[in-house]
Length: 119
Image (tube, rainbow, N blue to C red; front, side):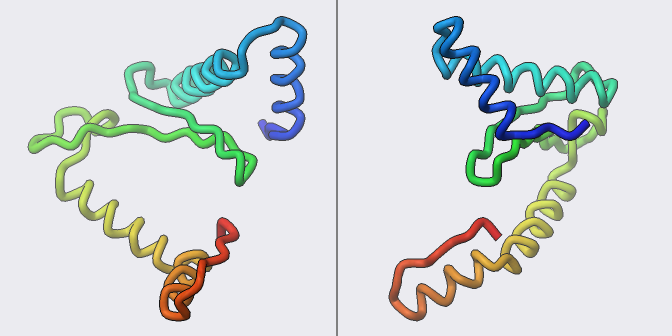
């Protein structure tokens, strides 16, 4: 299902205005609903997930949170330290290749403020 971020924000603003519900309450309810929907879709009710509204990218991002343990007993909830370190290394490598990372490095050498574009 494709969500139209701008239309969803309009609907949330309408709810805030019509019902006089504070924006923070509406946003928290939306994030909780997105987490519940993710858990239901994944058919894993006990996983730990968090949702963030990314206004820059106009997205709602959902993250599954794992516990890092010495001995993995449930791979849907836990990961080993080795797996966590590899994941961190892979993600850092991916981030280093982004346009914004290169811009930040060049701005540092040029002694100027970087111009980031979320790319």
